[in-house]
Image (cartoon, rainbow, N blue to C red; front, side):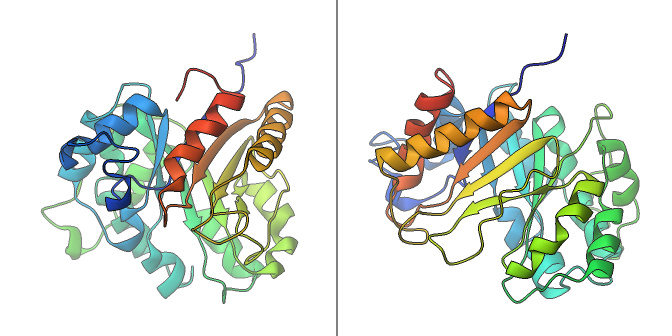
Length: 275
């Protein structure tokens, strides 16, 4: 019997002062905020990994704070996507996976690779990058073992089982409309990103799952979602699951604290009981 599609809805990050005493109960200790996220959602997007290499002990601490069936989506390093711009990236991904990502174990969900707006579609560059991405934790471990001296003494080089890995790409140039067949060939999801019209909204299905980022419908990172807008997203999610696709959706409209509340409201529409 085929497995039923899974819907996971959460937020992009969890450590925001604006949420304290609002979404988070008054007086909740900061060290327990992720634990609270784990009690309300089935997933969260870990975005500290975008800004710098984290440490194994951090990943282990985050894993211990959430339920066994919780998943972290992990945002790939901006050093790879924004500085190297996917070029000459043999060592950087090895360092990234050696930094502790694999310490999440069964809680490791999809990996997100967000590109800068200035990055135009280059078939050769993208093909090279996609071919490098590990498709299982076993492959990720082999890649991590090729880390450089920077990671000596702080690398995490073990797994508790070989599991499949999923990847999603979030381009911000309209030229990536030409990348759909290439992504489909590598089974990498084209992220469906709602950005108040600031960046293109790609909605082609290129993998066996859909990765959604909701940055704000009216004002980027700032505006909350109306009931009608959430109804529309709920309808789209049902269409994807009806087609047998898993869906991961993350709210990033956190500037005014809307993200966790909107995540709860969307989850109530499509996946009662997970939030």
